[in-house]
Length: 388
Image (cartoon, rainbow, N blue to C red; front, side, top):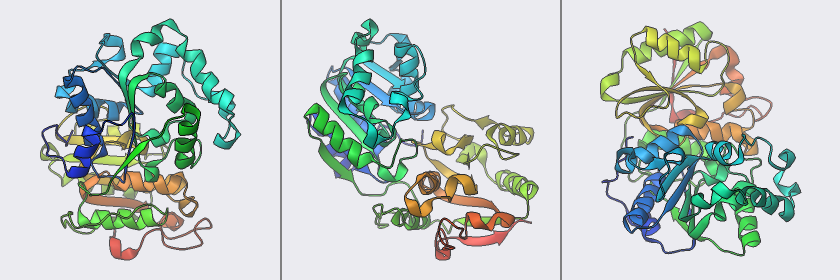
C-alpha cells in the first residue's frame, strides 16, 4: 500500500522492532506507524530464521501486510508455508475449527466470562491435530483491541517464544465491550505474564487539519491527543450538505470526476450498507462512470469503496465519507462504536477529506438525544458548503 518496508523508522518504531520482550504491547493512535513497525518486526524475525504467525482482522489488513513484506511472497495458511503464516482470524476458524465462530461462550459479556470458559475455548481448539503446525516462534496480532479475550488467549498459546499485540483503544469497533484495558489485564493474569508496553505518539499520516478534526473527536472519547508538529497543512476538511440521497450521489460523482484517480489513492467509505448508499450500488455507479473500483485489491493508486471495518489498517490520499447517523453519531459521548467508527474513517485520510451528509438528517452531525444537542466536532475544524 502507501507504506513501504524501506521507509525510515523513528526511534519509537525502531524500539518496537528490536524489543526482546516475551510479551510486547504496541499502542498508539491512528497514523503513528504501528502497522509498519509490526511488519518490520516480523521481517526482522523472519530474516533471523524464526517462524512467525501473523493474525489480522480483515482481508485488506492481511493484504497490506503481505504486500509490505517482500510484495506478498509470504504464505497464507493454505499454502503450507512452515516459516511464516498470515491469516485472518475468521479464516483460522474455518480452516482449523471447521466453522465460523460467531458467538464464543454464548456471546456473554466480558465481565460474565469465567476463567474456565476463556481457557476452555482454546483447549477445545488446540487439541486438534492440525494445530501443531500453526505453533510458531512468534505470534503477532494487529488490531488486538477488536479480539475477544478467548481469542487472545488462544493465539497466545500458539506462541513458542513471544507474543506481540498492536492495539489502539480509539479504534475498537468490533469488540464485545469497551474493555481493552480490562482484557489486557485479565490476559496477563490468566497466563501469568506481563506485557512490555511501548506507545507510539508521533503522527506520521494526516495533514494538520485532518489531525485537528481527529483529535477533536478523540478528545470526546478521552483518547490521546497527538501533537501536530510533524503534520503538513493541506486545507480544511469539507462537509457537503445535500437535500436528499440523490444529491449525495451526484455530489460523489462530481468529486470523483475531479480527481486524478490514476495518480492518487482514493477511499470512498460508507458506514451503513442500506439504500443507494451501499457498497454494491456505489461501486456500480462509479464503474458506470468508467472508474475502476477496488475493494480488496492491492494497488499503489486507484479508488476503493469500503465500509469502515474494511478500511481499517490502510490509508488514502483522499477520503470521501458518507456520514450515516446510525453508525457514526448515535453514541459519541458514551465512548461507543459510533465515535470510534467516525474516528477510524476520518483517520484513513492523509491529505484531503470530504464528508457528505443529508441536511434533512441534521441530527447526525449537529446533535441529537444521545449527545444533548452538542456539535459532534467543532466547526473550526471543517468548512461547510451546499451541494450544487
